[in-house]
Image (cartoon, rainbow, N blue to C red; front, side, top):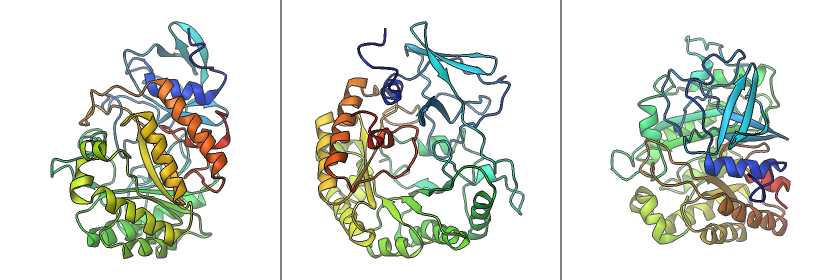
Length: 383
C-alpha cells in the first residue's frame, strides 16, 4: 500500500513517488490509443528504452496543474492501463487515479515556408511552453567527458534523428511568429536550451543569434529564458541580455566539489567549479537578483549537500532550479538508481521553507514541468 509513505491526494507527493519509482507499461500501450496526444519529441534526451515505432506521451497529467515525466521502469509498483480513452494509474494492482494525456500543440503539423514541419523545429517544454533546442551538440561527448546523466549524443543519433539539427534566423523567426499567432495556450515564456559549442564565437553564432531572431520576431514581446553553458568571455552574458533574454540559467548540476569533478568531468576540466560560480555571479549583476538560475540534479549527491547548495545560491541572489535524476539508457549513469521518494520529499520540504525565507526567489516556469517539483514547491503544495 502507498500510505503512510506518501499521500496520493497531494499530487506533488504522488509525482515525487513516480519520479523515484517510474511506471510500468507495455511499449505498445499507446500505439492504438483512440485519441490524439502530444508525443515525446526527444529534443534533448531519451529516458526510456523506446524507438521510433513507439508512441509515448511527453508527460502525464496528474491533476491540479501537476504533470510528470513518463519514466518506463519494469520494476515499478505502478502500472498504467488504457481502457477506451481512459488512462488509469494502479499501484500493486490497486487503482490510484485516472490520468490525462497532454494536448497536441495547435501549431504542430503546420509547415514552415521551406516545407519543414513546425514540430521538428519548435521544442515544447513540459506540456505547453514553446521554445527551441538549438545547437544540439556538446563537445564534452567527443572529448569523452560528458555529464554522467546526459543522453544528448545517443538520443540525437537514434530516436531524435528527425529533429532539426541546424537552425537559421529565418526559420527561427517564422516558427516564433507561428506559435505566437496561432491561438492555443497563454504564451507566458519562450524557452531556449542549447548544447555546448567549443568557442565563444560558436555561442554567438549558434545560440545568441537565434535568440535575437526570436526576440526581433516577437510582437508583442514575451519573456525569454535561456538554459546554456556559461561563456569563456563573461561579456557574452551582456550580449544574451541585449539579444532579448530576460532570465538565464547556468546549471552547476552538483554542489559538492569532489562529486562535481566525478559526475560532470567535462565541466570541471574545461571550465571549472570556481569559474562557474563567478559566471553565475556576473550574470546576477547583469540580469538582477533572482533572474539568474543555477540548477542541481537531485540524487547526484546526499540530500544535505543539495540543500546546502540551494541556500548558497539563494544567499547570492540566485534562484534555484532542479531536475530529479533519471537513469537514461544512453547515459554514463544508466545503471544508477533513482533517488528514493523520501530524499525527494526531504529536499522538497526544505526548499519550501527556503522560498518562505527568500520571497523574491522564483521558478523559471509558471507551470508544472516534467522532472522537477520546483513549481509545485513554490506554489506551496508541500508545506
